Length: 433
Image (cartoon, rainbow, N blue to C red; front, side, top):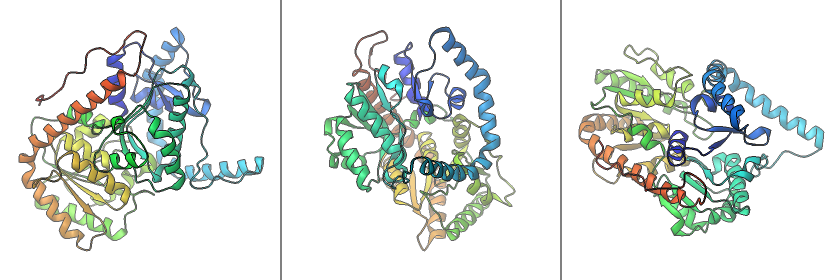
């Protein structure tokens, strides 16, 4: 999560300018005031410095940021339909103006390297699952930025990364060109990522397994008492398709089990992009008498993590909701219908000891014939074992927090000169429960 990355950097270098590439500068100011927007579509330059920059920052935090967040919340649904039209029109205009054909599927139409790079002392590709075939645009964009940093001799790192699946020939070629030159790659899982990086030629001493950046974010919001709700999120998107029958079965099982357990169903919405969570989760609660209110479209990640903390068990197809749950000691049922999410969830399960008899993350494939039976069994078993799993899961979260901080200590060591240089290593949080 970008919140944790920026916080850790700011703690180490209080006076540094921390720029973040974005196409929504006002939204960034609203949700992350410690970072400075570097607007990609206008060339990616640093903003104004000095008093003018301070005025821009304060206006963004207190006025433009909140207004932009409310506007996004009010317009996200129509935007979902307009994006397709806009992208089509953009392709048509380009072709009419230049005669160029549209880019091939493996070769996205990429923006130039941001101008801010010329004055950067460190380039970080922050946590995410975008180095994969399902997000070619972001993957190639990131590789181009890292390559440009390498050519200019700027330290460059990747943290909190989920790598793959990666089968696209052009992406594999570019990754093999660029990734071996990255100074450090910190992975959020150790099941598949290290093997893929080794195949791409990345030296073993540049690879760390640290866990997801969001683990500490969620861990801080844990509650002392165990929750009572059954949480639910179903995401359906181009990279995570779910059949109608699987969706209907999932909804029926969750409603039935919530009633049998005499507990409330809590709809959990973490992504507002294209309405992909809200559109598919809320219909599953139709007719449920005991349902928690859904968080509004202007809700924050903190709001979502706190709602998760009130759950005893989650059923989710969204990866970061499972991260939020496990990091707070809450077991989860992960439902998946794609190789992309298989890799995410199996990697996450491995970080929280999936090979034990009492694993806190149960993975259920939505295309199995006995989906009703598998889901029911997983929910009931985790509901029963939730109290015993709590301390073990939280301890695994602490270990990942320590690993993430140790990884950033190596990042700090790459930067030399200037005020706010790396000092003592971060204190571990072992035993901080």
